[in-house]
Length: 298
Image (cartoon, rainbow, N blue to C red; front, top):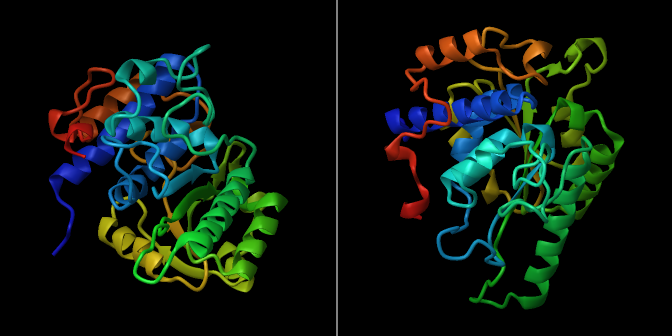
């Protein structure tokens, strides 16, 4: 029996719609990756160990780094629903002096752990966070008193996997056996120029295995919530970092799904209309169903 029901589907489609609306209002942004990543982001956020309602900066919180920082409309949508930022902040996406810039900036937006943008950099940052957490645990944990047990999660895409900084950091993580590091690979096979088959055909999973990582593959990253949930239990692997390859459809639900056209341009009016009708979402921009206002419950 599935652990997920209608409320989870509403949550995921709400994340997609908010990401679409944010980039449309800004007339700028990257809606494709948020639309594809919404399911795994929903599953992940509901498993992470943090409590924004009482202490957003709890030292033992799990950390999430978005290495493909251009997908930040998704992260901002999650942060709104978890009480970090307001709906007005989300509506000000990519505007001057807003709390929701076009790529995540740690010194501007509550809940952003690392400033990202250059592809691959966030994966390296996540390795650094995992090293720091490992050091704190080694210094302060005592038998029966584990003060530091937190994990670092990082989401990265095909563009990140192409970068040497990500490769070098992933190699180091495997060498150091960072069991507190879990990477989610958004395998959508699309970049801003189109299908990556023209430039990038290596087996990323085998590369990470060669680095000494534990690897898994969720083949249905669009609707396979239970498979995603099981995969994230990789946190139980403590002697090596974990990489979860999640095969997604960029721009899921859009007329332009699975094309480069939805990667870096706002979704058009007619496409937004058909998307919201397809998933039974209110046509009102930035609409959030009452049953998915989670911040008051945490």
